[in-house]
Length: 198
Image 1 (cartoon, rainbow, N blue to C red):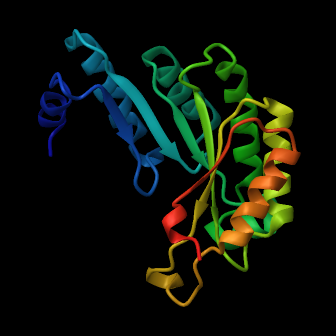
Image 2: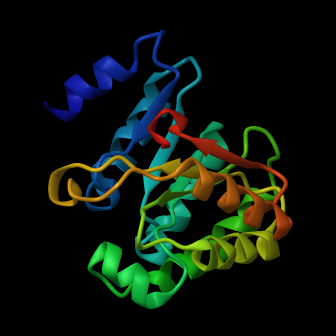
Image 3: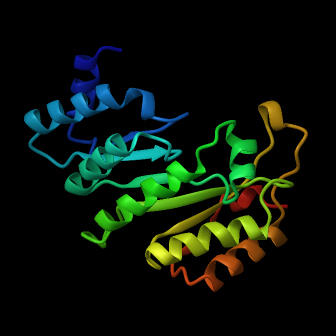
């Protein structure tokens, strides 16, 4: 697909939001920034720019992503894998937790400029045997220290591909994780993918 054909598709009146996700949009940010700039030049309607990312982008790129979402009415959803550096590396293969923390600190300042829709949303995939309640406590405590209004989504895990021998997330664990996140002071905590819980 060419940039021009993507722009034509995105300019349709029934397309109010462009969401970059799937793997991670980080490697494609130069093209996505160009796409969005061109859309803003050509569009007369609402075109929100949303991102779903692992939060590992370069600090300047991440801030630019957030600014685009802020000015367009979009959101930045960060999939925060784990709290401890060791577990983060086990789940992602990289030593990147500290970069995610710094990026979240920076964007949380921007997020205070707009309440609705929230600029920053965080999710954590509750992977059995990897994520325990201490991991959830660490993430949610960090988020609450930034802003108690950051929405936090706990996602049920579905075993597939290289992890097909893993179990589904248990309903009991999801409910305990929810309780722990609320105890840390977060106001908006949600359990999603509930149909996957056992």
